[in-house]
Image 1 (cartoon, rainbow, N blue to C red):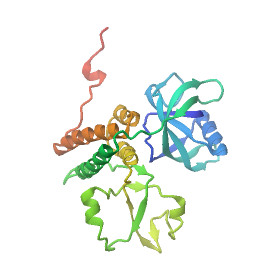
Image 2 (tube, one colour; image 1 turned 60 degrees about the horizontal axis):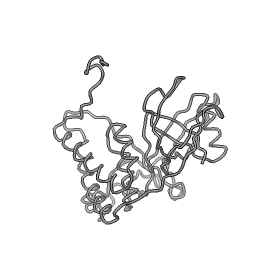
Image 3 (tube, rainbow, N blue to C red; image 1 turned 45 degrees about the vertical axis):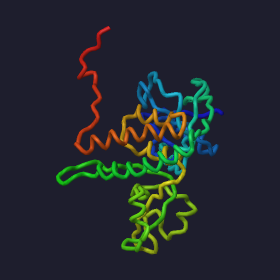
Length: 279
């Protein structure tokens, strides 16, 4: 398949929603073509180089299809987009002279689960540990922390404040209640009187993310939410099987939990710390 490419300093995982502001001429053309053709584009992680301006860049050969869910065009030609990751793809070739933007020859990657029983056990364990990880991310007394702004596209439900919820304790115990923001299917949003404002019949509601039972969907969801370095997130995206991705996630969750308990963070040496390179 031919696929317009949008290299970014980010990793988009399937099921994760990403807002984008488009202002460069080449990417305005990309968005216009995709909107008119109701077609996705590909997001790939930039390994070296800049997102904007000229110059050469290098990027990963595996990325994620981005489907446009919302597109707002400004009078001057800029766009605000909301895209959602769907499938992974692998690049086999790139053309630079056919369009103002890069065009790839790409193949969609089918998801392989691996050992299904093992993947399901790993998914259950990862969910429980991830809930504890999210709890540790909350600032302690006297601390300040940036809010995790991650949008996901999974099943949700609306809950009225104070409404009896007999399953809430079980969901919290098994990690089925994350409290993240979610993009909802437009058909389900139409069931509320004012879904965009988060109200039903004029009353505020809490939108609860229902964690998927499918281990592959869950593995991508957690890969897109966990706060790790971009190369690490890219490695999760590229995992050969769901089982492998979940095993890697468990190791990362344990690492991050260890650091959060001690209020530490992973140390990545920079060139300034290492000093000048010698060849």
